[in-house]
Length: 274
Image (cartoon, rainbow, N blue to C red):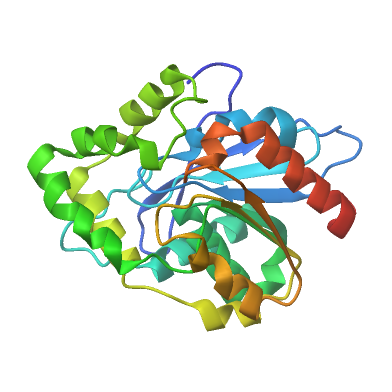
């Protein structure tokens, strides 16, 4: 890993499995900022947030966790249980391990599922909730991807359908290639298992249990379930702000990181006194 980025550290989750995490902090040493914990998308790792760090770390102490099955964290065997609850437990156990009582909790895409679960089931740990391109559950329609993923190959499928993730006319081709190379580092069968599990889960009404200020940033041309999939936030979250990025497909956290972080910091300053 480049020297200007933090190095991976590890802790043992309650089932003994190693979970990787990173700490990034450029806040003034005489004024320690609050913590923000970031959860990355499926098929990625904490490295996907590299472009967010220059904006966030002067103001926030940032904790990034590799989701189980991703990055340097434990890869579940086919015989091991794997659930959204286990991912949420990993997150809370990591906060406990580091002695972090409360944090701003943020997640991109599937990482936002974990962030939402932390806010729903552990409201005392959340100063705020931010989700980027993350609906309250994944549409079962994504199960239609699996035959093509297996027939074409994982990376070939992603390359063919990349227009659903990136606006190719406005995105650096090198970023798209890096995205494909990083996703190729994952185990394809586990990714199918991960996506399938998430496509069986939905928790819209549970959003009413969120007790902290919440910011939802969503792509205006969301291909996975459509923008209507974000409506449960409006129906159930009491303290809510929503921002739609018009004419953009799913991967807004990668395409426009400066816009995302500017909107997040503005929200935290206005609502949480950052």
